[in-house]
Image (cartoon, rainbow, N blue to C red; front, side):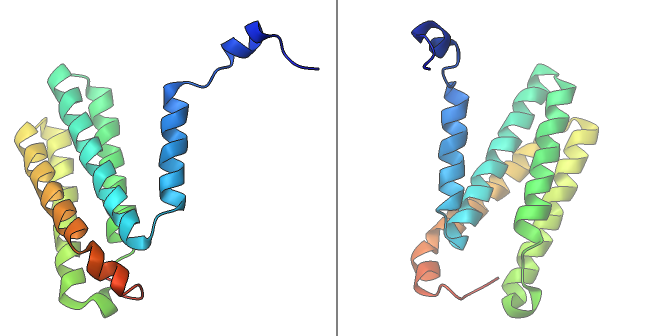
Length: 145
């Protein structure tokens, strides 16, 4: 009925599985504001991964990381912007996101670490600013950008 301890040991979850569960739980429990913060963190992580891959001359890993970063920007951050209700703030964010996608794409094509550094600094600034308005965002849960 039960597996022996030897076979159980071979099916032990990896650290990656626990990390994935933690990430899934964070996403499921996240407010819309927290979700954007998580997206910024994931974007920063992908940019850092692409810089590391570029330094190692691992072209495939660089391409995957930049591709993930672009998807985070386009699908996670830019697409949900409410341009009508968000006004100038949403428009400015869209312009910044378009710039990020452009810079990420150029960095990929040209192996341009300076472009990735610019993206990294911009994402850090956006993330800090976003986290800085957490109290205001939770006070007005219906507000949308």
